Amino acid sequence: MLEIQDIRKTFFEGTPNEVQALRGVSLSIQRGSFVCVIGTNGSGKSTLLNAVAGAFIVDSGQIELDGTDITHFPEHRRAKLIGRVFQDPFSGTAPSMTIAENLALASRRGQSRGLTWALTPSRRENLRDRVAAMGLNLEDRLNNPIGTLSGGQRQSLTLLMAALVKPSLLLLDEHTAALDPKSADQVIRLTQDIVSRDQLTTLMVTHSMHQAAHLGDRVVMMDKGRVACDISGQEKKRLRPDDLLSRFEDLRRANQLDESAAEMLRSQYV
Amino acid sequence: MTLLIGSLTIALILSLLAFGILISFRVVAFEDLTVDGSMTLGGAMAAAMIVRGTHPVVATMCGSLSAAVAGAVTATLHTKFGINRLLSGILVMTGLYSVNLRVMGKSNLPLLSQRTVMDYADALSKNVFHGQSIVHLAGWEASARDLSSLLLMLCVTTTIGGLLFVFFRTNLGLAVQAIGDNSRMIRSLGVNVELMTTLALFVGNGVIGLSGALLAQYQGFADVQMGIGMMVWGIASVILGETLVGTKKIGFLISGAVMGSILFRLLVAIALRWGLNPNDLKLITSAFVFGALVVPRFISRGSRLVRRKQNA
Image (tube, rainbow over all chains, first blue to last red; front, top):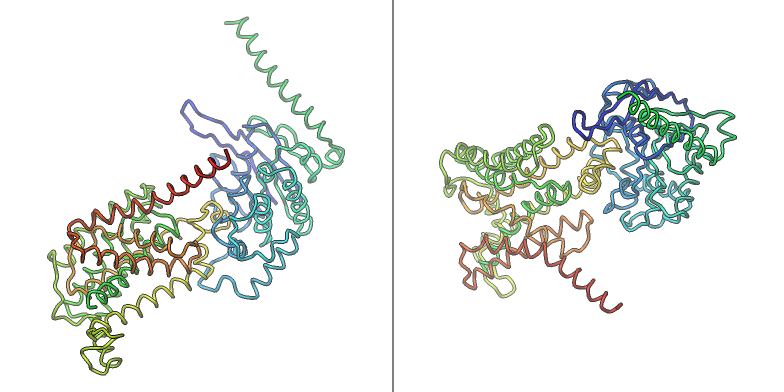
């Protein structure tokens, strides 16, 4: 389904700010699988997601989705296969356009957009039903600009928009991180509903150990631009947030060990 | 009365210019400086073709089309070659000055004895006013020819405005609107933002070129200087229109642009009547746009301060 082979990306190459964001990541995700990606800041988890989405082209390696090699596709061509929800609730919707217009835009994701009427009465009715099914009481506000809604409502709509045309892959980039706990909860419930109803293949980046432990069927932990551990199957089912935290602690110790060991060697040999 | 009708006619022609500015500056948020050049190009191309005996409607359309191409060139300089938006516009605008001189062959091309689209106004006058040369309008006397020119421009502006409105209700038009609102989002929904920006500037400058072509035929000459300052004029109309309608819905913005253009033209006509030196007009226009951009911010800051005092 999604086959990532040894992708690498270095930003600001050759400058003092050089960052090796991805140092050879390989990942294979099966159809219908829900994968959580966790990691500390700068571990490369968001970069991984952006590499798949096409925000930049990787330096080397290959990305294959649904049998298509998308490594060199620009972002807008990948959109045919990928639905996205961003961290910032304001990134996923056009604020001065109405709810109905935003949904109409999303209903043609990856398809040609010709000179046909965007909001026919039947299309409007159909979109109204989809919004009503979310249970947010927004179905009577379809003609309001989306900018008048709260962050949680906007993020819920973005989620609906990402899945309006069934994507081969759903990318969620810490999509609850900027929300208050109650809205975050609501968005997570909606995520579960949509993913399980359409059996979407999902890649979700999250900061929350709680979400990583309870959602999905696989957890990938990133560290320093590599996959540090990959938990699935029965082990994932038994996983608790504390287990993940202790794994982080292990990683941190290992990193410290590397540095202190290097320091020791330097003091002895230099 | 003649002054009023003349002002209204020019205002309607210039509301096409305001449409173009609306598309580039507001809808796709592209600060397009091609305007001054493409407006002249529209007029120059139409005038040059009319002088060579082309049918005026064909000439007008060619003027519009050539301006549209100029807009697409600006967009391409930005999207394909990564040149800054303002600089792309400046490069094209500057280059167009020479192009316009080449097209016209000289700096001013009179059209007085030529067949122009204004002849349709005469035909219209024969039909509507039955050949009367003076029409009594609510107690005022007005020349039938002037009135029919006004009527013709009203038709053209309404048609173009209507077409734009319909365009922005289509799937393609909706995608173009989303570019200025949230380009990241619309890219993630599979829209080629670069291509759509080019399309928007093509359409926008096409409308601006049409405005230039009609203006040249209305005033009876094309001049290489006729586009100078037109961009600021258009921005002034768009801002006025936005203030008048007070929403960001595209249909209101389109009609607002017409209203803004008319209001601004009337204000200018009144100011000139009161003895404003025409040479000062551009300075006044600039100052007006500056004021329109800054005053709302001061008002909101002022009201915030007032609220803070009340709370304290």
